[in-house]
Length: 215
Image (cartoon, rainbow, N blue to C red; front, side, top):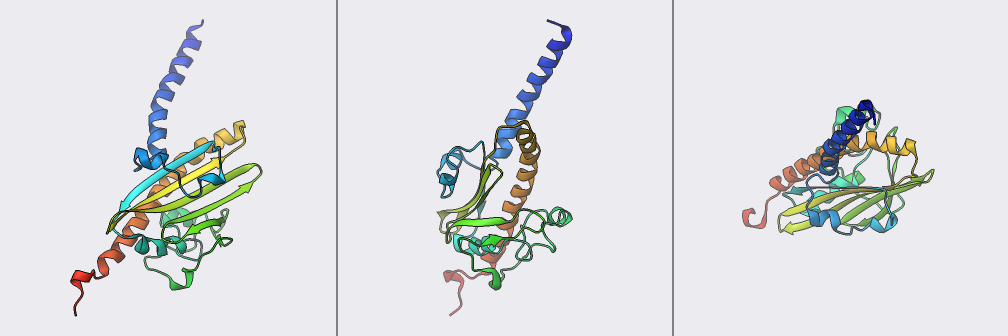
């Protein structure tokens, strides 16, 4: 066994030891063990995914206060609530994400499509109002779903959960594609969850609760 072979093997082993914990972290950012294992509405769409992520954040607002931001997402709608400058650079948006509820975009139903500019649009495949929004599609043997679930944990706090699932053909190209896509998707999705949290909490703070209302 050559010294070069041993060196390469050690480097690969060290790289895997470094990458695997990081990959696990960004595929489950903010999520509890229970949340990563919980069955969500759209899971049945892809019975045996080759890729899955579950990200979560606590929002100091009710599902009713978060939901309007979800249904108005999209190009020339409410935006994507992530890094607007990047989304605009790549043509996914043409304007900053909205910081207020847009009444004209509050109707969303199964069969509708959320537009994403130059990107692939998001078909709506399931809706449970104030509970879950499931987007998904299939192309060239690849299936994908993106779910946004709302789970109350108190009268004024909700867990906002994002789950991505996909099945891709096992090819070198698809493996390389996912290695590039995964960290980019994490960065944008994490920012989106935080963007939704900020917007919903701002609305919740502005709305009077029953004990603050003036007769």
